[in-house]
Image (cartoon, rainbow over all chains, first blue to last red; front, side, top):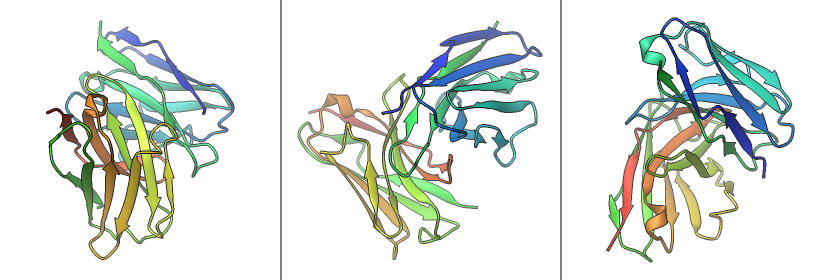
Length: 109
Length: 117
């Protein structure tokens, strides 16, 4: 099983600042990585797939990068609606297994 | 656009079988290339992939749940279903259905299932 590790667990950021979230895979997943945003009481929302492709309707302030085992989600200028929990998910060599990271909570500083 | 909606009992007794259905609207579940999935989230915790099914009936399950999970599809009703047997309190969670593109999108709103006597 590929284990996905996200860091930090919690990130305190002021509105307007940049946020950088990390996701590490226990083995290479190539570019087969997605990022999600989840707000309290809501289902997750797909932000990024293919490590760097924004999903439909996702603002340009969200960007993804990386390949292999190291990935980054960057929010260039945090808006009030961006404070949420973010998950990464690998889908390498699917369809077999899929795994999620443990999440990073982005909170207001 | 495609929308998904979970339905099923919100309370299940220990040792019984949890059964949920996901109804797909705005598109056909038989459209090729998509994997129709179940994911759960324990209260206050992260996301756990349960498994998925292709419209042809091919299934793939999380190894940690494989012995207890069955996912099936009814293309005539545009639905797919989850059965999780021998449930315990550890199966209490919000259960989501979602389409995998790759990347899960869209998601259903989720349904809380509590396992309790």
